Length: 238
Image (cartoon, rainbow, N blue to C red):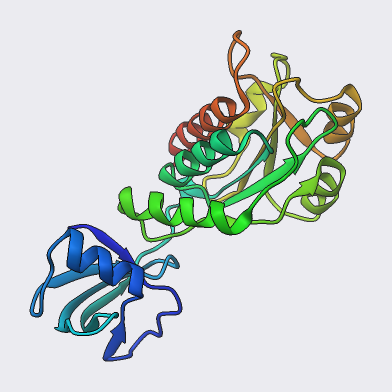
């Protein structure tokens, strides 16, 4: 059953209204009518089943049938920070990272970053669509863009194991020492790579180097590859 998004859901409420956009999709695209069942989520882990009680007007009125809180998958406890890139490629990266279930996405401004403009609201819409398409109940948080230096300072206060995607084969074996319930933080630079000072500062802030193979990857490819790599490593820890 296709998933719909309903933000600001209040647990325990008997009825709710679907947004105009979601109502239009349900009515015009999926041909849903009064009495039909819908499956929804608030993006915060709630799995909701509701029946269309009233299909008149711009917003469908829904009667809640069932609601269940879904635990956040521990293998998805990944915060992915990646250099901002061309808008269409950034869209693709956010879409795929959402499909992979990451917890947080951080647009990053590095010394070699070429494209610095970012539209968070637009990226959030991409993430909502990807969450629904992939049948997930958690919407990743998309943070405001930060500089590499700000990111290193911010993450120095966070628990978890931190990785910097970098074409150096050292330190990679340390990854398996992570705990199953520990958060992973992945940092991916622009196609020009990280400035040597950025690598040095990252290591000083407790980051480990994460190799992603011998080929030169685009930023969005490296981000997806890195997340898949970390999810596999996490699954081996359980």
